[in-house]
Length: 211
Image 1 (cartoon, helix red, strand yellow):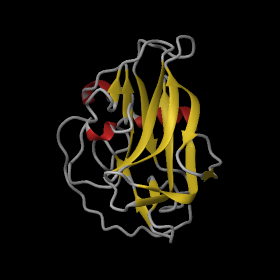
Image 2: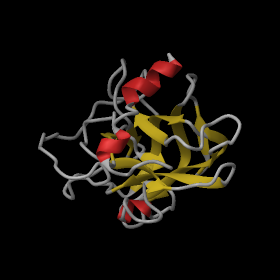
Image 3: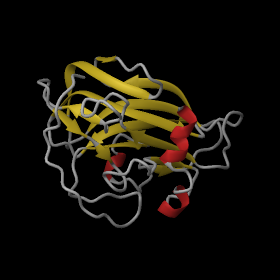
């Protein structure tokens, strides 16, 4: 993805309620779900909280939702898991991932992905709570954050996507919780979906494992 200047005017506002919800007026989000349409109801059975037996395989979908542009020509984000194993990664579209750091994605596309209902699935992660490598009795989580040298900020900018193929970069916000807070997990497996329960494993704690 080319380096660009952010072209959105951003407004701050206060949010309330569960971590598994977001202000309905906020746009350009990135989240992880147990179904391709989980973003419609993050608290539902295919949303951002679920229960899996040890060694059961399950797919996590990375979705850009409430898009303000109809096309995605590339995207970038850091996706980190805790207490789960990612066995395989499947990109959507004809892509070239030029990321060099672990857990980062800097994805360019030879042709765009077109939004359906203002959403695009960009990635699938085949996951498992492994009975040997992970603790099935503890919550498993996924966090999304920006990359080290992002298109918006050369030093740890937010996630983003390329909207038109002509250097239009749009900032992405966490699909769940405060749109500025990347310390809320975007997926919880075998844990309490209530925000009090998941706050024990914050992104600040998780990312310290990968420095």
